[in-house]
Image 1: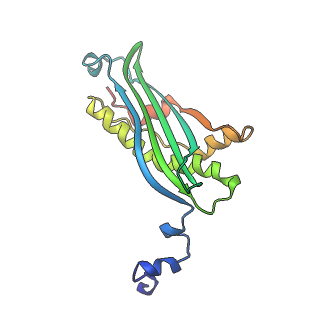
Image 2: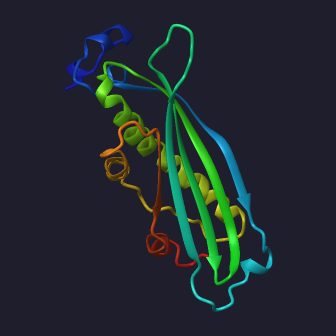
Image 3: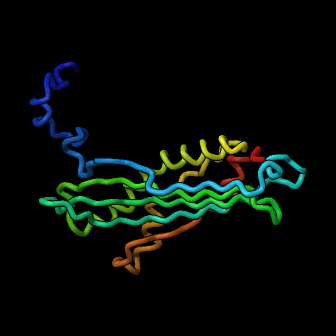
Length: 188
């Protein structure tokens, strides 16, 4: 078993089982928060439970991909996952979150007809756990229970949005409030 482990960096090039980073079709160069906003307009009053039931969470997201202009590179892209959350109880807004999370990546040996799907399915899938953690931390630091966003099926949203319009660059969608409430029953 230890014979299968490369002994040095030069041996990594000979491994061709698709699991090594050098052989993956996507190389991630950077991940970053592009824009972030948190509003807690009715604090501290909104932090006190009043027996009015659980808050309603309206969660929307968007995805965008664009090719980056960099000298000598024609396979460099930026993919941005956007998430907007509005938490309300009755007519009162508890909090608002807007985040744009970017990934700078390059594609290798990906046929042109598969690039769009690779960028708008796999990259948001990779970014989502980081965005989820940021949202959970923000809500907790603002005095609420952490908001744990439900998983998103980016492949399904891609198919729904691009089946009839492959030229479209940005897709937007929303998660149901019921899904968010299930994971956040104790949110103030």
